[in-house]
Image (cartoon, rainbow, N blue to C red; front, side, top):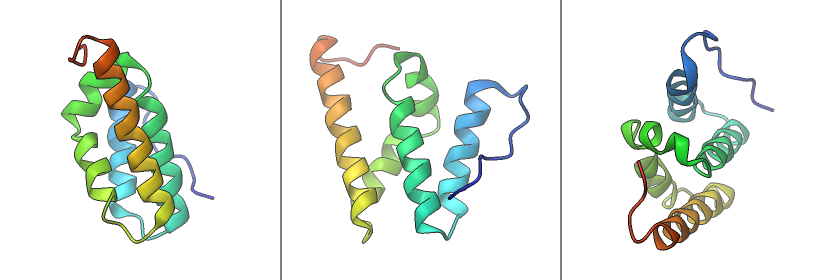
Length: 97
């Protein structure tokens, strides 16, 4: 099981999300990638995180995960894309900032 990213507690939400993205990009462990991608997907449910996820290009990370051989990563990426589409539908076609 992956360990929590080592983040200074004073860096806030953006710093924590950046640490998750960095961990996903740098780790060789498939289990760690799955856990990190699941965590990022959970953060995507909160509209308060949209600006940070956009800034960190997390949507691109999800889209890139669609071409992974690991089926779990593909499933997380697809589920997140569905979640974003539903939010766009309920927010009048635009994701709120």
